[in-house]
Length: 557
Image (cartoon, rainbow, N blue to C red):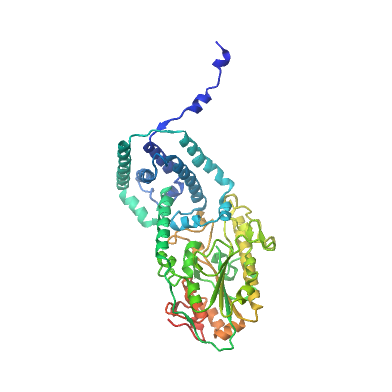
């Protein structure tokens, strides 16, 4: 006997082995896999909520686990068939691995708002989240099971039998899910009733359902179009010799009130503004915990008080009302767009700017938006409102949001993988980015103060806040009902040139006193109309922050 033949390695034969399975079997195994390995964030939240702290906590956990498996089987049973099971399930494995990682690392919830944020992120934002810490979970829970999936030979039954098998799978999934939920109905219903947001942690059901809702919402909005508002808007009469007015609205990004120097933060993160002494609003609440919600909301007449996402996104914005009144508008953007607020109106993007003074391969500092602004405004006579949408403190790469000259607080977190940094390093990098916003706002004010041809003013308002590790949460976008104040409390400041406040009849000292009262982003729409003396039926005086201190003509509503 040939000795060489006897000792040949056997791994090629093992490697050639390809198991056989029906699509329904693959769906069942994938559901077990997802329920077991992709729901750590759900189990942590359920445990923290006390769902398993009762005497029969183990039984409650078993019932929830079985329900998650059955619900996942139902969703996969609706999505997968003999043609889509391998390519689509491969995508689901990879996406679920990434989703589970980010939910565990940053404490995010994959509701419709967060999914919409993800879909509208650009390549630059996405690259910041692709870190070394993502590699291992993607390999273990995404790539490896996907490779195993492609080794399976599909067993295909005749059409009639395939239909019966699929109907049986769907029916069994519904039945098992119902029985599992009923098995501990009191505990599970109490959990879902008192912590409604926890359903957004069940993966992959959370992002599959949210994706469907986003697609349906977008389709419906395209059919409906945008409802005009304030078409009756007109400017109040002014003396013929009056200078034109220029209002700059700076929409900040991810700056929270708790780290704002003017609000009494232990660090003076706003030294430039402190010297200028603008009107500061220390008790300001955002309309949402993400840009996708807050920006459309603050430019809408409806706001958080009467929050209706469809109504807000389906209606024109403050800028349209200003245009109807004859006030030119311009949106300058150093981020990912105006979220439909400026749709159909003048818009300029600096997201991929090339000015070597302010831009690098990683992006541009916000100062780039001031370049050529006066020429743009002078091209059209009359009053103007300009919006500058900052990159600001956009995370997790806070260290890229400020120049080295403003790296005042050290040591800093110099990576987008926040899990590798101490909380001190994260906060130091974040506070340095706040210093950069302070510097930009001071530059903007000095820029406006030099304009002798117009009466100028500035309003700064951050879109939402940020979590920096408090209670295990990072970044933002937590559902508003449970969002911490770190994500919903934001800074706002206002500055007026002497000519603006005089011609407008605005008592700035009175406004400083009013600023101590609670305010919200709901006030922006009506306050801007009042400040610019626009008369329209959509204006509400009670929401105008300037109305109590207004010595001139005001908008009527």
